[in-house]
Image (tube, rainbow, N blue to C red):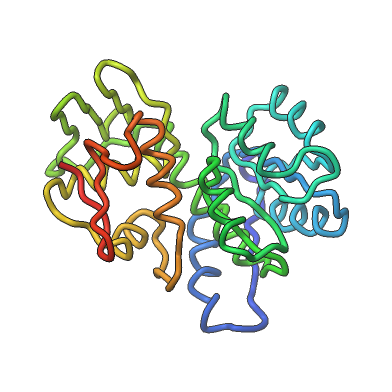
Length: 265
């Protein structure tokens, strides 16, 4: 499509204005003319249609699937940039689908569900999801979270260079991580990290030897205000340790300082 014919869309919040106005403005500022492809998996047609409309208004290409098997077929055929998965599906559940996608792909995954239990959220994040949204949801918040993940994923894939004065690489005790190439190698083995996992490890390396509170790590990586009882950081740290082949009780790199946060030595 010709760039000149592209339209810019604005979603205006009609309630909780103070809470969502900043996100509305950011939504406008960060819109892009690049065609990005998003998979929406939900067996509730009304929900899938609502998400599709919200995303298409932002210029994204959307593929809808009502089952896990159809979603896997789409993943294999299309070059996707992000996926939104419902937990409750008629065949494969969203957790299993997320796990299967993560076997081959690193694009962001958002879980969408009416289940609000902490264990469900921890399960999804541990299996490789990047974010978790509960129903009913505000369409504006959904779009804002999608854009946040896509900006991070785009920077990760393009290898956006670090600022000249910033450290571009850390190399210690067999761990090599480069912000320039967005690659991480541990004892000669390249780790397949998602953009969020890379960002977490990079931030800890930047503060090596210091204890980073969970609140600080969350706000630095996710760019959102930390809420009480937030298990997101813990779930991603567990996933990161697993990829680094770290023992759960006595990890050699990322260590837990109970009641405070995490440190890397």
